[in-house]
Length: 385
Image (cartoon, rainbow, N blue to C red; front, top):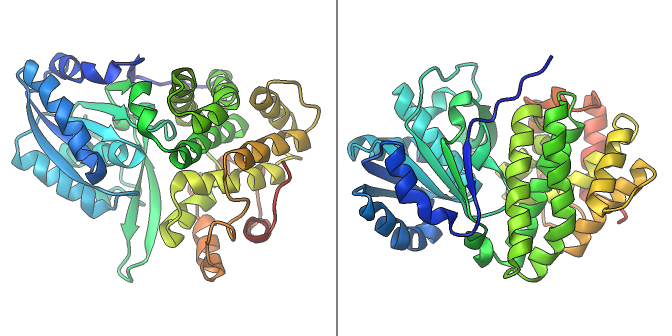
């Protein structure tokens, strides 16, 4: 027995973002909190205020979001929402603004700090204000997921990334507009595209995969193999941009059903401690974790390799090589050392990874010693591809 739950309404295609005003009105919004990053504020406000004004909807702006928002940022956004008497949220940006918007909505609904729910057993219990997500990258898929990740800053100043999930996190509407993605530079296209690939592959090999999650994941993998190189090479290619936007959303649906694995288990502390962007961390670590899963998820990896390469692969080694080869072709560093991650972070990264909440989804029950050995490989080795 399994369950499939993916309630977000997706409006997909060029020009979809400009439906924000009409869709906000449909949801009963009269004053919207725009959640975005500082680099996106002018771009978002210039057209969003116009399309909202046509529908008689007022706008307040929260533009403090930076990469991997901490819980304090979320709380400040929730306070602005209450102070401005907003009744809905529009998130415009990559994974960080959309996750932040989810946290703001939950904090407003619960009437307490988001910190109370992150890394604790406390669950959200109240319906949240309506949220419209407009992703500006093709990577996280958070526009359609039940998950959000926040940075927690400890009393000692150390940062850690904690994932949370809730049925209340699903945005009501996702406006997925490939035209918005045209401005992404090749490096961001590559990192976010590999983030989407990581979601699809980890969910596909997860112990909790289902026939329904499988079909979303395999199609996402196929589209990424078909179009990520092109999107990196020519950002104006709208066919490639559309394929990647769709792949990111499909991967998001897949991970919401099946969960993730130890790529994310390592990527979270690598990002929080060493400052490596999440998509780039996933891109570097993905081949190593899949290589370590060849015995436990061999048949699934063969299916992954076939979907990614567009031809039938015969064994898991070929599949891992296809993953590594894609990363190499689009300029992903081959290991953590190449990416500039200091070995001084090794023990802290490992300690955090050992406590990863979704470790149980891995098709291999890694021992702590095996994870230590795997992290050692991630620093120095290169996976052929």
